Length: 529
Image (cartoon, rainbow, N blue to C red):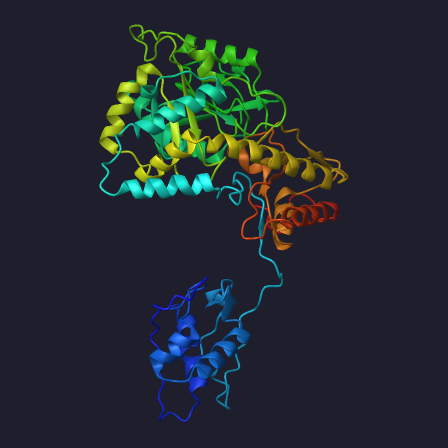
């Protein structure tokens, strides 16, 4: 990485000052860091560039940088000099002598350095490994899309037609879903698609919706309807995912009572049938058909979050709910009087490429039920499409060239290897059970009760040892009873830690944390009161 030569710092030298030139630079640069004018991670000019601007020798600048590096203010990386990333501003005392410093020397201690030589290994779930994505096909797709962007018109509100055509082909080949590209909407991801669906359905209902969600489930998808003013109804799952028998024609009265009040059925049910999040259950075919029958009987919309469906390691994936709801050649019937949804139109499927490709991609899709397509299109026309035109074009090119299928097959093998590595590393830990997973980017280590673990304490001790994981209990709705306890460990990305030995090292640390005694439940330093 080259030095950012255009960085222009407000520093100067005074040759009439008796202090040496390097000392003048040290004092001014230190004050810039302390005041916050220079923040952790900010680049500094090259020694040659700063020396030329100030009209002094390069050696004077090198001497100043070396001193600040030794004090912990600066950090050299890949040939560049930056303000140390781990320099917490709250720990830096202002430059200058203390009131009791009679010698005039600066007595304040430099900020503490990291005790670890390596960066934090981040094993929080849901983030893919992007290191193997930069293939020639991926680079070519983005290069050609960027070149074609000059003078190109904005994509239509529903999304670029070439991308919708490629997504339709991808769904046909990979998920058994045969739909016309006109039934597809390009989104910025699953949450964007869910917001669009709830806005359309709520507009037709003319009131806040009742939205049933899996408990436990993906927290951000649970928060979307809450933020939009709808009522969220947490529904407990079992080893096969959501049980339609828990969805009678009534409203959930609350997590504490665990009963239904017969009033009105949920308007929508958000499910992850292919790979329930976070426990990994796959909904069997009989239960999928039962859920569809329930939705048709109660004029309810099933929102199928089809995340991680491509990353299956054991057996073939079951067909998407959309494929069961709307088979090949099926003709959707218009809604009957007094009903919002028609025949062949009770499932909307949300998909995203972020879990397979890159979290920052910001491109996904929505397979819309026919009865909602018109309202969805009107909403998208008014609100605009948030997905970048360049990203849409690049994804269309990448899909057309078979890049997604090749990358998925490659990463499926790699993630299976990592899953097996995790199971082997933690197999002998007492009081911990690895929940069986048929696919995905994470594993669940459930506490069996044989050892009195406190999951917040385990998470805190793992972080102190350099490994970040998530608490399993955080995936249950607030106040819900019966939540299982443990930790959720991702094995996709590893944060800033270098690839290779990061995952084995992190699993060794986690095994030692789980094998070491901790405080009894409720006595952990991080336990909530």
